[in-house]
Image (cartoon, rainbow, N blue to C red; front, side, top):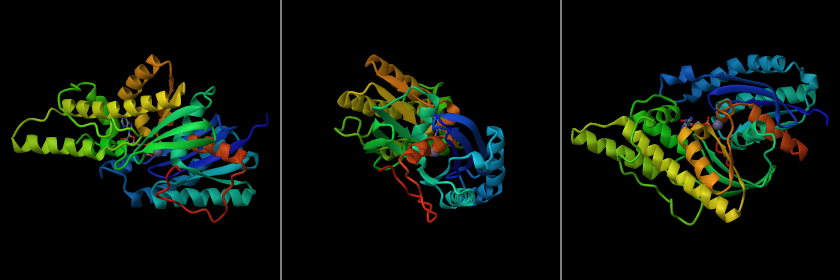
Length: 337
Ligand code: KG4
Ligand code: ZN
């Protein structure tokens, strides 16, 4: 098979990332310049700062990725870029860079949905993974449950009706002063707490659908904190985050196992930043293995934002000749359809 090299660019949030991937699954370079230190002191990603940093970093990161992959622009088959969802300023920086390369090198331009990218990170990590497969995508902006009949073709089973899982993690961490991003901090602290210490709701857990809702759970945590403070009582942070994380994991595990049973699939993949959560991985793995179902998740480096996943997803678009035009624009609120 001829090597089809795709250069992927990702700049939707606070990582400026560029990768070179061969045939959708073989990573030649995966460079991620994180801006997290610039945003941390503000307790979240500041869009204005992110745009400026992307602008400073994009060209050096492209050069670094090409040199790490030991390829030149002429060796590329296509250029892929995240066009949403994300922060418009950052997206535009990546899109402008991708267009410039595509135009000057006469290469196909491929537009990739960021969430789709998170899913395809699994294909890089697990070379034998094939459809049919159920996919749980949980990140800072999205919580979607999908069914892939084929690798290039998915159906949306359900999604969150309000907050994304990662958003709930970040908010809870913020009110407890655990720092930013909140997910990893909660993951770590939860292992020292009692998961049944505080009773919290598990919205929609028994509903006969694949939808999620996390805002009620988040509010319950905030109310608990307020009530304890008003009564002058102590808040045991480790117990609270352990109880919160347990509620989240219970909900996610319930919906995934429901999908596995109803669709009779034998494989599940996890995607998105929250897929890094250690308790989610462990409990899902245990539940699924009891059902004879194999769970796949990307290694940590591919779970968080990177461009290898964008270049991988792009390969399936490239195969279907699904090119974008030079009128490609950022779509900050893009969803998986
Ligand atoms: O996919 P991602 O890197 O960026 C988005 O596209 O949103 O996901 C970031 C989210 C953040 O909300 C972060 O707190 C969460 O993923 N996260 C975690 C963990 N690591 C990252 N949530 C729970 N447990 C973790 N270990
Ligand atoms: Zn992401």
